[in-house]
Image 1 (tube, rainbow, N blue to C red):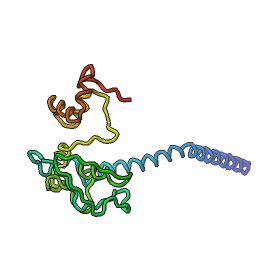
Image 2 (cartoon, rainbow, N blue to C red; image 1 turned 30 degrees about the vertical axis):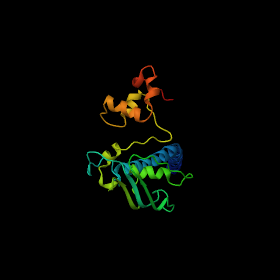
Image 3 (tube, rainbow, N blue to C red; image 1 turned 180 degrees about the horizontal axis):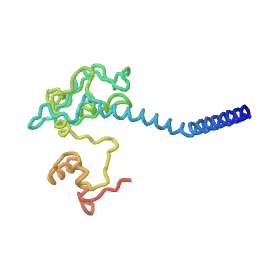
Image 4 (spheres, helix red, strand yellow; image 1 turned 180 degrees about the vertical axis):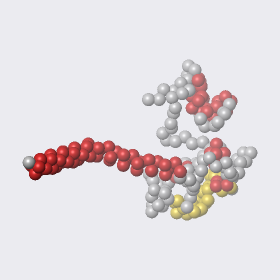
Length: 210
């Protein structure tokens, strides 16, 4: 009788353990998509924090550097070597030089990828050349305070970005604390004043961006 009880007890215990193992395996199967999502999220967070903590070589918030009363605007690229960080083996410039005196109009002409936009990126100091110099009024652009030198340059790209606000506010984005007179002068320099004046609310006319 005892032997029979022992046999039944261990038999039932085995069945119970087997059922628990099956349930555990089923739960793991249901949890596996979540575990994959957790792993992907962890990898993405690591990349995000790595980007946040990265110290950029060109720091837009660095207040060190020269600030002049004004600039004349002579631009020179002198013996510049450059390739983009993402494509270091594809040189864009190899000893490239260019001089644009203040008050002149220049056109850069060439096929796609020849470096036209790169010249602008170097003058705006979005990148630094690998070798050579970018100079404004004979001073290496690296010596200027970055925030100040960017305030002294204007860029209208091939596909300009407009914000869903007034024309006045869109122009004012180019300079902190711009006065109404400066905003009006900027519109006139951009040859935009005539068609702005024809709008119902002039500079206060709102732009609706789809």
